[in-house]
Structure formats: structure tokens, C-alpha cells
Amino acid sequence: MRGAQHARAARRLMQAANGGRLLAVRIVVVLVLLMAAQAYDGSLHELSHWVILALYAGSSVWFALAERGGGRRADSYAWAGTLLNAGLAAYVIVEHLLAGADAAGAADAVSRLPAFLLLLQTALSVRVWHTALYAGIVASTWGIALLLAATHPTGMLGPHVDLSEQVPALLTFTAASLVVIDGISRLRGAVAEALRLEHERTLLARFVPEDVAEDLAREGGMGAVRRRHACLMILDIRGFSRLSAEHPPETMVEALLAFRALAQGLVAEHGGLVDKYVGDAVLAQFVVGSPEDQARGALACARAVRTRVAALNRARALAGRFPVRVAVALHAGELLVGVFDDGVRAEYTVLGPAMNTLARLEARTKAADLDIAASGDFLRLTGPILPDGVTVVPVADGGNPALFAVAEGRQRVPA
Image (tube, rainbow, N blue to C red; front, side, top):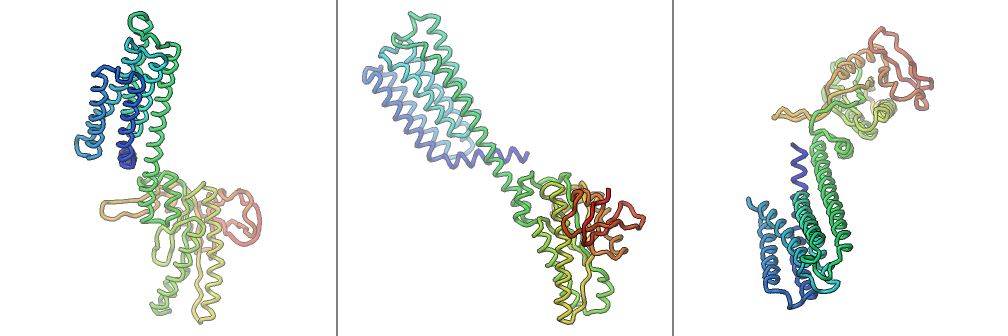
């Protein structure tokens, strides 16, 4: 449904952009047809020919103005304009191709001109089915006229019309029509996709940073909840309840806000986003890119948190404040990711068993007194060789899934 809405919006947008140009093109086409008719037979044309061209000119401009005015009948006017174009092109082909053609070398040229000119004019409406209808009527009429001329060469074919030129011309028109129709379809698809991306980006920008919103929208967007891979990271201040009992609330709020600002900045810097704050904990997710890219970003972020917290504590020590100890747990898995909207409150978040596993990993990380710990599922995504300065050590706590302490050093990831 939403894709159809974007397609209709794309068509309206392109038609609005072409509105004035389309009217100008109609007028130019009318003038070209009149000049071509004058150059072909001049004033020798029967009065009916000029009457038809005059009626076409007036009707074409009127339909264009009526369509620009919008309203409920705008689509009807558009279809009428398309049929008018096809009718004129068919008339000129029949009139010049059959017995009425009596000027050497001119009939072939003049009979082709309106068909191609009006094809381009119809295509400017960026309506695929209108262009297809026009091309079908003109090609059918042209083909029938050639068939009649070939089967009755003495009675119907104009004296200077060369079928060896008209048949390739018809094939050229058919090929050009297919190219034009395909081009319109691709153009509308591209504009609809651009509108979809902008819609998704605008929706996601309410919940996530701008650059992350653009990446997510490019990958399909989050307008609907969908299953996708994510690397998860939870950061928690150790002993926050004990510290809250020992220090004034204002001091704890200051420490908590400093910690949140640090986490928010580092998560965004490494391509992730903060899902939510839960008390003194920060839940972050890395959902952009391949699972391997997500894991590398999350691991680099966790290491940066450890480094920055150490620097923060040095500054706090100089100011006579208590140190902040942080535990970081990392996990990866398939989750439901997107904007959960119950009609009252919308929230961008992730759900799934991996979230429950992460909570257990966090508790085990704190129980083992670790700075950073990761599950085996997470570490497998980082590759067999870890970044320089990183060592993983299995935690023998008997829990499931397997937990590994992430320390400084270098060794191969356990299988």
C-alpha cells in the first residue's frame, strides 16, 4: 500500500514539475504540425485537413489547461488528450501514406513527424499506460495502413510512398515507443524510491541520529517492524545503588549524566545508536552494515568506553569525586527491529530472545567483575584474528551461552 502511495506521489510530483513545460510543448507541436503541413502541400490541402489541425490545436491546448486545473475530471482530460494525440497521428499517417500522398519525397517524412513528436509529448506526462495506449493506437494504425497499401498497391498507395522506407520507420517507431515507455517506468520508479527513502529517513530521524537514519532507510527502512541482525551492547555503572546511598542525589545525577553523555557520543561515533536508558544502564544497538561490521563497531566502541571511563575517573579524582566503574556486555543475534507504534506512543527499539540473553550476560559480567565481556556468538563475527591489543579469555562460570572476558593482549578467538 505504501509503495503504491509513493508511486502516485512520484507521478504527481513529476507532472507538477512538467505542467508548464507540457503546455508549451503542446503549443510547439501544433506549430510544427502546421508548418509541416504548409511545407508539404501548402494551400493545396483540402479545407478538412486544416479544420482537423485547427480542432486539434484548440482541443489539445484546452485539455492541457483543464488537466492543469486539477479536480475530479483531471484524469479524464488526460485520457482524452492522449486519445486526441493518437487520433491525429493516425489521421496524418493515413492521409499521407495512402492515396492522398502525391508529393515526391514528402509523404514519408511528414507521415513520420507527428507520430514521433506526439510520442514525446505524451511521454512528458510520465503516464506509462497513456504512453502505451498512444503507441499501440499509432503503431496499429500504421501497420494496418501499410498492410492495406501492400495488398492493394495500385488503388490505395500514394504514388511517391516507398514501403521499403515506411516499414523500417514503423519498426523504429515501435522500438522508440518501447524505449520511451521503459524510460518512463524507470524514472517513476526512481522518483518513487527517492520519496520512499525520504519518508523512511524522516520517520527514523525522530528516533535515531540523522546519518544512521539515512543508512537504515537505504537498506529498506524501518517503517514496518522487520527481522534483522544486530549487535547489542549494554553498559552499566557498577554499584550504583550503593553509591546512591553514600552520596547526595545531585552528585549521583551529575555522574550519571556524564556517563550517559560519554556513552552516547562513543556509540554514535562507532556507527551505533542508543536504544534507551534504563536507570544507570545504557542499551545500544549496532544494526547498520553487515554483521561483521556491526561487531567490529561494537567492539571498538566498548574498548573506547573503557579508555574514556579511565580518563573520566582521572579527572574525577583530581576533583575529589568518586570513580565510576562500568561493566560492558556484548551479544549478537536476530531481532525484530523497527518503530513500534501502538497509536499513542511510537518507539524505535529491538525485541527478541537475544535481548533476554544480553540481560543474563550483563549479570554474569558484573558477577565476574569484568570490564568487558562478550558472548561466543558476538566474537565469532569479529573474525579469527582480533584487533591489536585485544585478548579474550573464557569465563568458567558454567553459564550458557559461553562468556569471554575481553582484555588487552592478542590471541586467537576460541572456537
